[in-house]
Image (cartoon, rainbow, N blue to C red):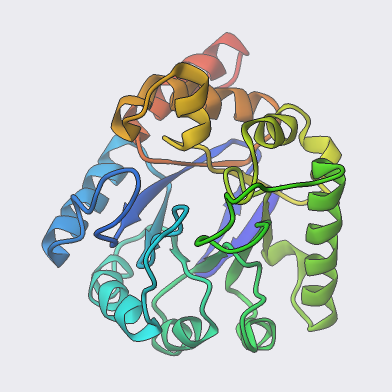
Length: 280
């Protein structure tokens, strides 16, 4: 199992840790601790790599429920100075953006290895745009609604089947545009327009929503699901629950886990691998 990710062709036969760098002052998880200066963001990114992150995911727009609107220009201004530095490092860089306008500027300047899109390339000409860059990776995520309304009574008749149908449709759109399957990574969108019960259904049985034999990512770190399960309202106090979820996601087949607490996740996965006789 491999993923074509820009300058890198990632071997996903061993799970990878994606470290999160939020350039957003209203982030649900860290409240903008690393967004006030470029240097703060770069220092945080360096710490994530030191702790064991193998991919960095950089975001300039919060996608938490009820997040404030951020213009494409403001998103670009947040992202570009950080990416110009990080892209000089020998590490895969994904950018968490849903705007085709932002994607276009990033691609033109070579400031990403992959697009991590919560809207699965549904904005403007995103699909046609990405088709022009044959090495760039693409993460297609399912979301019901938009960040400003996605948690207003999400409803499904069969959440796994509906997520499966959506991802299959987006895969077909990409392939029809000339995008190779080896560039695609899937994400069921834990917490994006889903109740606790919906999220647990997806986490418990990935085969029920995974439409093809493609790699997939799970991002559950510090989310409200974890808070609901452990009775913790403060996101930064959800570390142990988040790490448990990451390890269990890997046990059930996840190829990449997107996390805030990289060091704790790495240690847990190393012990898990040792228990199963894998290389540490």
